[in-house]
Length: 154
Image (tube, rainbow, N blue to C red; front, side, top):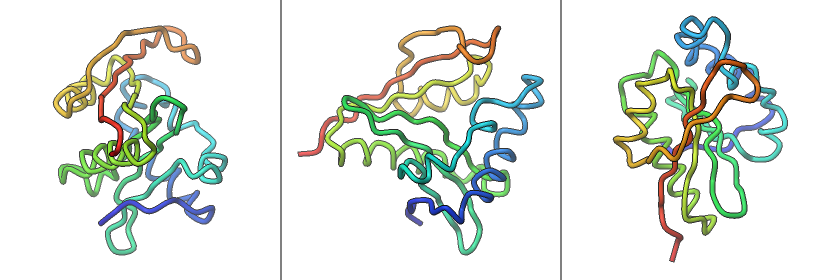
């Protein structure tokens, strides 16, 4: 099961999976995390979303932006029905491979400081915390910036 680029007709499934995957955090924060409120149409058009499918089911997705000197993970989401199967790790591995294929030396991401499980997962997978900052879109929320060096493709 390899990720495939999202198509415009995947939009409803992307929105539904993202809402389901982030639902525990929506409850914890009292408001939806930024990925839940994102307009994914432009990201689909820009080729920034890849989907993991099992049969006809959408199991997970990653939103990966290409920048001149790094790749940036905007969101990793796994359907609750597929959680616990290391699909999030598979998507992180895909981000590493994609960054290398683009000739980029690192993958960056940011997450909410209250998403402690995610921070621990990213750390275990080789991400280092580079700083914390106020979320410019959500007063009172703190973002944790993280980076993983992946090396450029040969």
